[in-house]
Image (cartoon, rainbow, N blue to C red; front, side, top):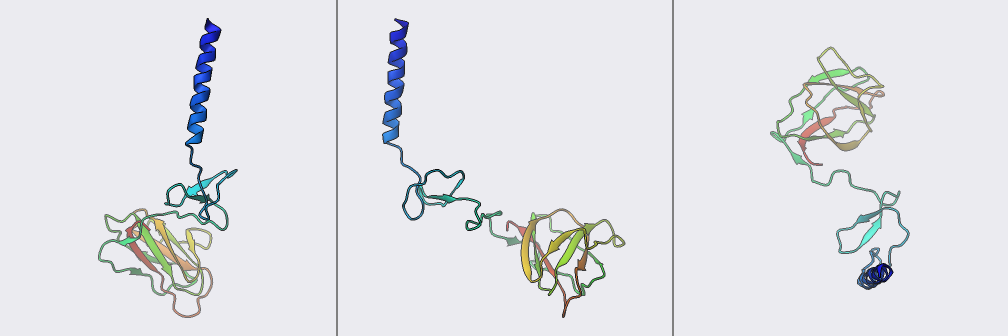
Length: 167
């Protein structure tokens, strides 16, 4: 009797699994072909359409919300940046969760939060921003920052920092 009950339960489970399999809709790639054998897939926002994630040809967005300026909307401009570290006093708006750093200089620069106007960034500390680039990062609560150019800039070097949310 016990063997019969186990067989019936197994049969019902097997029939249920087969019935569920016929209603399964596989994920597809954007070209309509079925996905199979992929390890990691990212949703494209289109129903049941996915693409491989993380490859060199498939960049992933880190922050998904647009950058919205905080405070007055005016950037903090760090003029006169050179190969000698220079300190600046800054004020972060209360609602800011990120900042956008624009480096229009012909060279890379490093910026670091410092405790006072005497402390400074070095060529091996702080965050490096590549020449002629824009980046958005999460923020802390700095009162002072120190900036240094990694090489002598050709022309004026005045990076900008804009506080905001998202990015």
